[in-house]
Image (cartoon, rainbow, N blue to C red):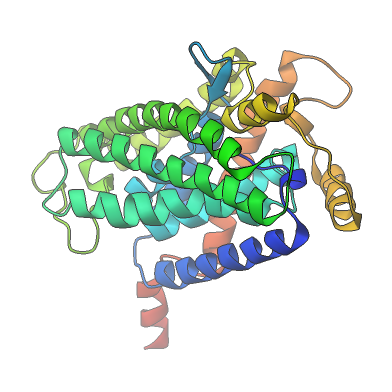
Length: 340
């Protein structure tokens, strides 16, 4: 669901940048109130895992389309909605700047559509409510599937609303929505099942990692962990390297749900962008994208995909940890002791 710059007008892009920035500021403030240093490496590794997972497009049978993991629900079910939202921003920022995946002008839209709903609606409202008396595998599966379906529907609807507000006449709202909503219903179902599988593994391995909300009952006391926290981090790190470096080579070549919907209406998976603002954003992105489209420039080789998967995941880890230290996240106790 990464929107290209051609789908948004500068005014709409600016508005969505402002909305996403306000949500990010709120998230930073809330995370600064937490005191859980273990979340610093967890943000990085979970972000890398989601980055790698997004590289694997799975085929939607009988449609000629494909979908991929979004990740907002998965991140927030472990990190909480605020840290999950900041981690998703890190993933989307790396994708945009280093790989030209999603437009720079449209980044505010993509953060809102792919991160806000999954983190704050799916996890902050739905997940928290379902887990209020403590998690179990049935609750995790139910919340994951329902949450992913709901949040992808909201994200898909936002894409169509943003193109409507941008005056993209090639994509009439009713026709565009009629294409986007059903295909993302299926994608949301698959993402929900993937999310449930990962979270059930974490629940078995280290039950206290499952976020239940401020008033929720933790699973830590009721269920004995099977792996140490360090081993869980190593398992997630190994998984992101395997997925990004190897399994990404088997990704479907079919257009994703957004591209498929555009192609179905216009006959092409992409629209042409025009105007000085779009041109400036494109020039900046061409300078920052080291591996555009997850490939080595001017070389057709699978090495580019594998390199992108590993390099991108490591970049997400570095960015997330750097942000944590830059803004003093998860260090409330340390700051209090220093003040004394």
